[in-house]
Length: 354
Image 1: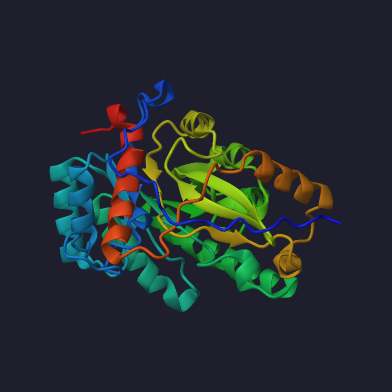
Image 2: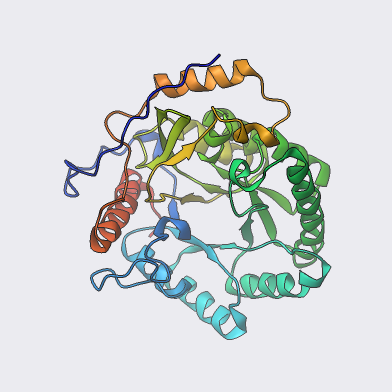
């Protein structure tokens, strides 16, 4: 029996100085450009958290202008309901700012949703997008499903959606990149992509998500890099708690991900790939891998794999308290979000395209 550890209560952000010196830029980041994923501004985008000192980003134009101002090389952002007029504005702004632009799009649910999907593909391509990230599940496998039968039904529908989408992106010659989004293990996603066997459908390689599925992040990158069309570059911190472990995005260079290996592998297989920062500022996620419900959708994970992963978590436990925003004012939350993004960009500052 695996012995559960006592929960390590995360403290507030006491002691964090937003003016602290940034780390030295490592040699391995030379030659890389770092852009920003829209989810790095999950609180600020659309004004989900409001404060007059941090005006909300109401659309892609606001996001692009801000990201350019702070030195990013590009953006990856949602493209839903743009329309031709707005698409033209995005294209003009992208060209003026000299940013790379990637899209994020929802898969067609069924045949009746194909018109919507194709329209968004056209708008994105008109704006200069040639790679669009997507997900099969807007949630987490171990939270969304109560049984393996539910997961199998989801998988069946997801594969059908990907088949519908493949015909559209092939027609318009844009690439669709499926993210490992706490839904598929890396091996499952590799199998899906191999079976689909399309030059137009590959992967958005998220550097940290699959830690939640008991996978070593460096092995995940190794598995998915041959299919990489786009990236979510992030670093992760972990700590034990009574039902499993806590998982947090942390500033680049502070966590468990081998960034050098990940970026080099992705570029090896795709020399034109863009590197996009996804630094999500939030409270730690609870990964309850010592509860029965967590295992309902898994059919092939052994006890030794669980033991090995928890040993990894224990060995690589984040020093001090994991970042959290609970208890902060709206202004403090937005300030920490902005400083986290800037700190990560500064980590690769000398290599940004301007």
